[in-house]
Amino acid sequence: MVERKPTPAKVASEIRNLLKEGGSAEHVKGMQWFFKEEVESHGWHTAQLRREAVRLRAIILKDFDVRFLVQIADQLFSGGILEEKIFAVFLLEKRTHQLGNPEFRLFESWLDRIISWTDHDALVHYLVAPMIVAEPSRAKAAFRWAKSPNHWHRRAACVALIMGTRQKCFSLRLSAYPTSFWPMKMPWCKRGLAGYYEKQPKRMQSRSFPI
Image: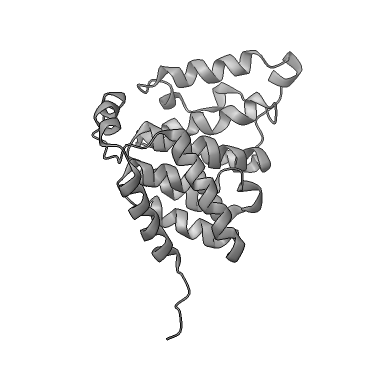
């Protein structure tokens, strides 16, 4: 019998089984108080989850390319279990330099699959933000998200720009954000970006945000 070539769906299914079997029921009990939303979890610690993702990534990349890895991650991020989504991000963490605009648009679509601030911030900080730093013109997406009625999109508009601002890849004029962005119930967003902006040299503050 000819052995079937693994598919992204098959590999993702195997990863789901691994995550289900390797979790901690005791850890699950202590996790929910971190979230306002009801979150379904297998009870993995973050460091343990990252190590496992890095280990499996190395195995997968011996036989497949990064596009195959992206397809696996896309399968995992479609689920409703917190660890599946975080694992998807960790599979691609520090690989964004190998990705392009199609993957950026894919990650943007993942914002509609968010279940909590944890998977949101992992996605935006580890995947979306580095891709904006690599290609600042992608920052125009953040201005689009800022106008969204979806609060996860509005949160992404803040988190996605922090890395680039820290690295002085661009300067940010807060006035460029729509007025409707600021009254939202996430004042830390405005405080955080304002803080980074104020630390920029005056010569940087005078520049426009590149979009």
